[in-house]
Length: 274
Image (cartoon, rainbow, N blue to C red):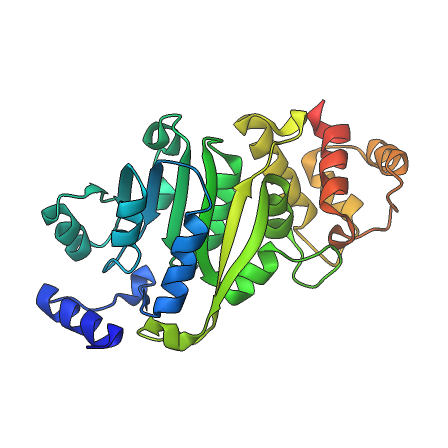
């Protein structure tokens, strides 16, 4: 029986079908599954959380790897299946959880074949914290993965790039074409591994990181405008902005995508971080 046939049979047994509203495309390619498990194994943590296990392509291997595996599953049919198997389950939306309470200060790794519609938000939120989440191994739509790792000055470089690269060392794990999933999506996917960086002193707290995110959102709000005009929305007067741009040797006519991650951080510190 092929993986595709096995998943179809399991769905029939559950009297369920993939839900487009939840972004359900089940991973069926063993090579990709093995690469994800291998990437997860690079982290020395005993507390592991899988977001959206679905039918369990990754779950059994993750359970063998970790002392403590928690599943976060929003789908009622799949939640019931995992509950019956005695798994530690949270039947909630991963975007609405209290992650501080969930992780409880334990060094933790997150793994997920993420639903495409929540992937950017998950990266943003977990960049803010908690810091005890030491790493993530996530599947993304390839276009989103490219934005996350985009270099300064490229078309893909933006808010997501700067936020992710400020708090994580990020590496490509493997690509996955549409045929690696059931049902097959219309786009290609990519798995990335994230390892948390030691933050700058002015970005250590979640409050500081939320301020940094607000600042980035203002900076990238209108890409065609000069950055200095976008930052006026933060309530900082133009003379102050021009002064700090000069201190950091940033052209007052620079646009958001022209600043490096380091420059974004330094400018934040000069304007808002002290």
